[in-house]
Figure (cartoon, rainbow, N blue to C red):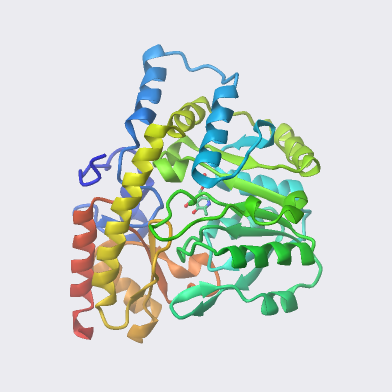
Length: 390
Ligand SMILES: Cc1ncc(COP(=O)(O)O)c(C=O)c1O
């Protein structure tokens, strides 16, 4: 659990590090990669040992007998989230972007509207559009430095062609842990407009002290017939390259539709992802996550203190995730100017706000899941790059 250890990721096909210069022009020589949402930490020993066990065995055949894998999911969801999952509810997809795309495919038709609360994880809009469906953006309200939902406005914007709602809970990029009341409002909204509700809870384990994530499945039994839950080990344990996620559906009718799409696309599980996930969902994995969250909490405190001290910059308080969402609107600079100062002057690669949809225009997203010394360096560089505002 040495989160301070710097591990060189260059030359490992790391999107975050090996594509930084090409994507942003931030030099590999001394740039800081704070974009793609993976971590610069090794996963817990139990995960690496499980993979090593496969390597030692040396035969990489098709996966079968998923009982222990499903039991591990069941244990984790009950133990960590107080959520009861039955083995037959679980579909394993090729990650959760794939899971989202499969839901769009299974539960909507071309031309249908799919609602998202923006700004939100950019792949939602991408897969909705690519499938020939309509993205219906419902902007979050930026209020007292936090995002809130505005259901009066959303009700007025619906025209009846919407068939699905994709919720990001906890929220990427705003870092909100939605409250029970907010989640109930989402559930009511889905019922009112007869929407399938897909709840992407990939960030549910990375919740900062003082906040509690509530699984959408525990909010209201009346939405069980329209609810699709999505979870994964990949974000929590930094094994995104394993590309595996779980789409969990209690309702039999929705399950049959999803199963039909899985079958039509010929999808079957990736052994590496499942073996690592099973090892991760264990007491050892849980202890590692607790230590990780503690470390991330330290990083975000340090980052927020340094960044919020720069006049005109405001980092949204992170209730969950390791993705800091920083508003530059107070600088009075246009996007080109503040982005150039971050990329060219501070040499930090970040995600650009507009890619997250309406409301992201004045923001940049910084990934803080890296050894603390790099977060300190990023803060110092930002303070230099905006020194004229101090
Ligand atoms: C909300 C959300 N869903 C899904 C993903 C990616 O999922 P996967 O790597 O399993 O496709 C991310 C990655 O950042 C995310 O933030």
